[in-house]
Structures are given as C-alpha cells and as structure tokens.
Amino acid sequence: MNTQNQVQFIDISDDEAGQRIDNFLLAKLKGVPKSMIYRIIRKGEVRVNKGRIKPEYKLVEGDQVRVPPVRVAEREVPAVSAKLDKVAALANCILFEDDSILVLNKPSGTAVHGGSGLSFGVIEGLRALRPEARFLELVHRLDRDTSGILLVAKKRSALRALHEQLRLKTMQKDYLALVRGHWQSHVKVVQAPLLKNILQSGERVVKVSSEGKPSETRFKVEERFDNATLVKASPVTGRTHQIRVHTLYAGHPIAFDNRYGDELFDSQLADTGLNRLFLHASALKFTHPKTGEEMRLQAPMGAELNHCLKVLRNRKTTS
Image (cartoon, rainbow, N blue to C red; front, side, top):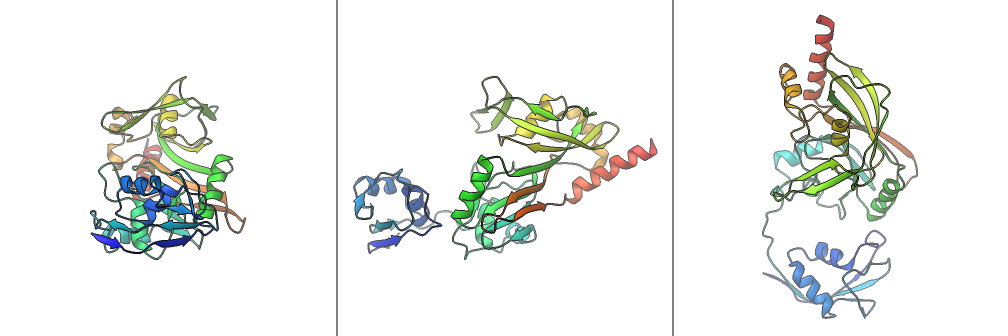
C-alpha cells in the first residue's frame, strides 16, 4: 500500500473542467477503489471551494478541490510497457499530431481500449507511448476488427469541441467496405432504426427494429467486381455496428464479418488471402478544435485489403 499522507488542494484548469468529481478523483487517485472514492465524497472529506458536493458535481475552471489523505493500493495490473511491440507499432500508425489532437490509422484486430478480457487497447498503448501526456481520450470509437482513422483528444477542451461536432453531425466519416453482390446505384441512403442487445456473454448484437434508435448511412459505389462491390459508407448517426447492419439490411453483407456476414460469400474470396473484416475508416473531415481550420485526413488501407482488391481486379480482366 502507498499512503498519501497529506491533504491535497488541486486547482481545476480549463482542461480538467466539465468532468464529474467522481471521474476526476478516479483518474487522479489511481489504485483507489471506486467504493472508497464514493465514501470520501459522501462523508464530506472531499470538498470543492470548501463546500460539500455530490459525486455527480461537474467541475468548473478555477474550482479548488480538497482531497483527503487516502491509502492507494499498489497497481494490480502492470502498466502497458512502452517496449511492447504493439505499442511501438502504434508510433508508426500516427497520421497527424499537434498539441490538441492525435490521429491514428488503427490496425484491424486491435481494440480501441482494454476491457472485456483485453489488457491492451489503443488508448492504453498511446498512454504508454506518450507518458508525458496528461490527457488522452478517444473522441469516437471503431470496432475491434475495423481498421482506419481514429481521433484522440489531447486536451479536455478539444474533446468537448469535437464531441459537439459529433452531436451537431458536422464531422464527416467515410468508410470503405467490400460487400456481397452488386450494390444497386440508386440505393444512396439506408435509414433503418437499430436496436442493440447485449448477450449474456457480453457480446453486442445489433438488429434493425422499429423499437431501435433512428440510424442513417449514405452509400456510394466506388468499384464493381464480379460478385462484390466496393462501397463508400458515410454514417450520419453513430450507432454500434451501424454500417455492418445497414449493409446486411440492404442485402449486401460485408466480407468476413464474423457476426453479420455470409460464409458462402467469404469462401468465394478465399483466393484473395482476405482473413479480416473488410471495413476501413478511410477519411475524416472536421474542424480543428483550436485553430478552426477545416481538416480532412485520410488513412491508407493496409496491405491485406489492397491485395484483395488487386486479386478481384485481375479476376475481372481475365474473365
């Protein structure tokens, strides 16, 4: 056990403002059980501007937080070592970085954060890679098997501004997906409400349902092949598994989708060497949270996806 013997007084900066006091303390007092955090708040040992507060109190710039002495458990889970191959590989995936944001071309098969039995995720890897960064948080998420562009905020003010763009739907995300069959050119938009179910195993399964949340994806044909179509998918809403379920709903599941896909279609792609979900977040357009500049960043597809398309193009020319 480590013991923090003295009362701390912490002045809240602009970057720290806007978060709940319980979440602030969980991040600040690493290793302290959540139950203890709530106990010291409830007993009035944590004070803001000398007054008692509730766990849901949102911090304001200039607040002074009194943190009592607490016993901190030694870190049970070893920190992700910056020497790990995966962490080192993340350094090569960075597309853009400045004081406010970091943009990554996430590899397929890597979760955006640890949990659900996974000890390693992109955000843990980035924190190991940038130990000096006081703040690193995901702006949005990508499924574990989806590759491509992922936006990370390096300041709370940047996170708030980017979340506002997501809320107002002014941030544009474009994905490339290889789907079964011939996508009909006139199908430019799929609007189908999506309902999320969490199975006992913890797996998330999404289906189209009138009880679901309104969901919209725009589609454009990029390239046609003998038995497949490369489409650009631009989600207007940001629901879990949205593109994967909307393509299925349109009758064109994505190649190698282990949850919503078609095994027969996948078997027809055996000679392409593809062995992962063909869904790639290829471009992101947003306003820079600090400079106000319009940013459009692109993430190149990996070798496996490019090779698959090359084989499909060769099929067309030889048939």
